[in-house]
Length: 485
Image (cartoon, rainbow, N blue to C red):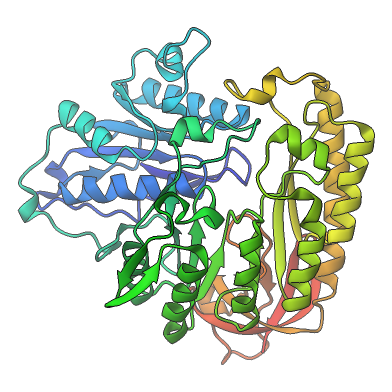
C-alpha cells in the first residue's frame, strides 16, 4: 500500500500510489511486499521517491494493504501539531493492522518530553526509527527484518522508473526537483534545522542532469523545491560546477536560467517554490518577464510587521517587502505571488495584526494561506512572552483568510474573458466530459484549478499532461471555469 497523504488538503485525503509502483521482482508474487505511506511536504515526497526507487531496485514489491505487506514504512511529518498527530495515528494504524513498522522522516528526529525519541515513546514496538533523508538507514532496517528477495542484477525496472532519476510518486506530467536539503536560518517558530540540518546544496550539474532526464521522460512542469531556494549555493560559496561541459555557478540565478533553457525545447514549465525574499531574487524576475520560467513566486513571508518579523527571527528585510512586490509587478506585470502567514504569534498586538491585513490588501497577494500559531516542541518561540489564547489565534486566522479570499477572488475575476494556456490534470473520455487543468498561476495541490466544460464539438479533445488553450468564462470559488478554444 503506497500512499501519499496531502498536507494541504484535508487530513483524510489519501491518494493511492500502488498503481504507480509496479512489482520490480523477477520472482513476481514471491517477492517480499512493502507497504509505504508518505506524509508531509513535497520535500518529504522526494525522500519517499528515493526509498521506493531503492526498494524496487533490490526486488521488493509493494502491497495495496497494510495486512498484505511483510513490513510497512511510514515517512512522517513533524512540523506542526496536526502533522504530528496524523503521523502518530498512521503509525498506530500500521502497527494494529500489520505489526512490523519502520518509521522515517522529520517526526523520527524529534525528541519527546522525557528527552527520548518521540515516536518510540508513543509506539515502542516500531522496528526502527530514522530522521529525514535517510535512505540507507531505512534500507538497512528493511534488510534486517525482510531480507533482500534476490540478486538485484536480475530485477526488472518498473514502468514508472525514470532512467537516472528513479520512481516518481507524482503524475507523469509534473515532478518535484529538490535542489538542496536543510536550512541555515533559525526562525523562532521553526524546528526544521534540528530535523533536517543546515543547508546542503546539491551539485549544480547533478540538479541540471536530473532536470534534463525528467524533461526527456515527458515531464511538462518542474517544481523547484528546497527549504530555502534563494539560498542555493551559499554553503559552497557559489562555487563553479559544470553541466554539458560548460561552467555553471552554484547560485539561484544561474540555476534558474539553465533550467529555463532546458525546459524551452519541450515547451515545459519551471515553477519556483520556497523563495525567501532576498534582494538577489530581483534578478530572477527578468527571466520570468522573458518567459523563460513561470512568472510565479512562492514566498513564505509569514508576517508583515517589522516587530513581529524580528520576534520570528525571519531573514531578509520585511520592511521592504511591499516595495519589492511592487517592483516585481512593474518588471513583470503577469507575476503571481503566493505566500503563507502566521496569525497569533506570541506578543502579536491587534495593531500588528491590522498591519498584516493592510499589507495583504496593498500587496494584493494572489494566493495566501494562513496558520494560527501553534507551539512546536523545541521551538524558541515557546519561550516568548505574550502567548495568545487559542480562540484569539484562530479568530485572527479566520479574519486573515476572509481578507485573503476577497483579494484572491477579485484577482480571479479579472481573468474572465482571457484566453490562457493550461496544463491538463484530468480529462475523462479524452475531455469530452470536460476536465480539470491549471494555469501558470496554479501550482498543483495548493492553488486553484480551471474547470473545463465539456466541448460543444466532439472533435475537440484533450489528454492528461497536454497543454491546451482555454477561454475563461467564469469563476467558482478559488477556481476558474473555462472552455476549450
